[in-house]
Length: 292
Image 1 (tube, rainbow, N blue to C red):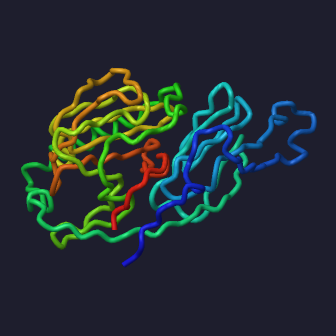
Image 2 (cartoon, rainbow, N blue to C red):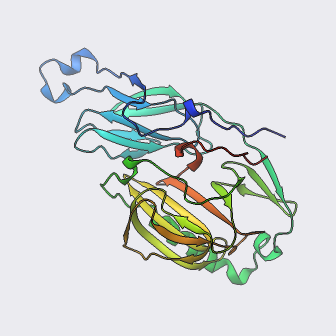
Image 3 (cartoon, rainbow, N blue to C red):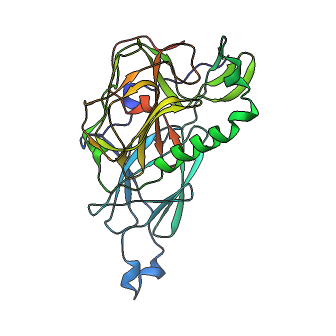
């Protein structure tokens, strides 16, 4: 069985401007600059920390720069700040395109654990034909809630833990339900009793509030800006509505056992558009044992 990669404090993504920056330089060919001011803009960018699977990456470029990562345009604000995310299975080499020029960078690869879960209601392991349309519609709603580009950097205030309780499930683990292999787990599971408080880990705007999705039960999506969203699932109660601006630390929901679960817990997921990220990487340290 493979061991879960748990990043050290040094490896975590951090929002502090005091964080050491790794300067990455991508310089235009000289002949492109001669006699053409349009090509004189700098292609220099800075990235915080190393690139790692599941990571949320912060960077800075010259204002007005165009950046593409994983085939997606990256929003660069008026100060040149930007973010992007790397999914679970991003390859060991990443191409970053700045002002049309591409350069490759190494990405730290992780090993993910295998998690066997028994006692799952069989209707969630092999859903009947009668619910397939519902499952499809649920997925479309969540996908749409993650596609907006809110040009406000709520995430810059830093993240806090959304709930109290032990971590019982980690990002990236391959799950086997009742002996049937399923998709990897893309969230951070925090165990707690039904009705326990869930607070906003960072400010944002609610883009989806749904009380009863097939797999995820009570489901809440919050947009933190620049393509970054949080999704909270298996909730017993949701206290906020779509379009509402919420503040860090605000009560947003309650832990539940809705959807495909074997017990009450919060499943927190994070996305940069379609890239699924590891929420644990943006959190401050806290003294507790991680899931085995």
